[in-house]
Length: 188
View (cartoon, rainbow, N blue to C red):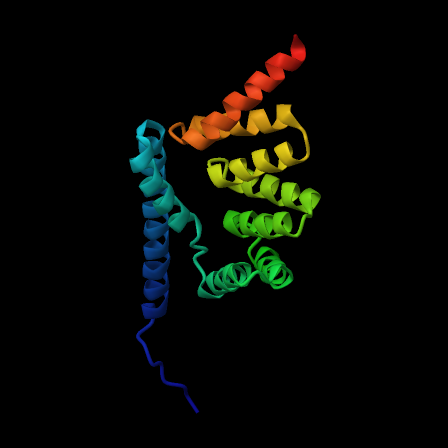
């Protein structure tokens, strides 16, 4: 018995090529939008920077997979409900299945921080920054942890790195300046 083709030869490969091309264009589109937003962020006033920060966070929160986005949402919902162990579980599942998704590591670091697990939080922030060196949220988190651990030089460096990307954030600028005064005072 001879099987009949449902589609002419090559139609599935053409469809697959079109799907791949669309995915690549979408990824490139987000990458170029991200680059433009980062350039604008470097020059923006504080009000405009807040809008740009929100858009960048939206871009960075898209994994490209509905399943991974669901895990991210479940983790966020658990954080919102103050169920830190459940949040850690969801974010761990996300980082296990999507290890190249920087936002998964960033969000799990937040959950670890809330669980007072500073070592794992720093490790996850480092991983997030390795995947996305422009992730100013991870830099801000790193600085906060270093301050909490009484490591002012490391906190100062993290705040300074944050400000090279997001210079209009007055709260971070004040924290950096405060630490700079502390560090200068300890040298005198």
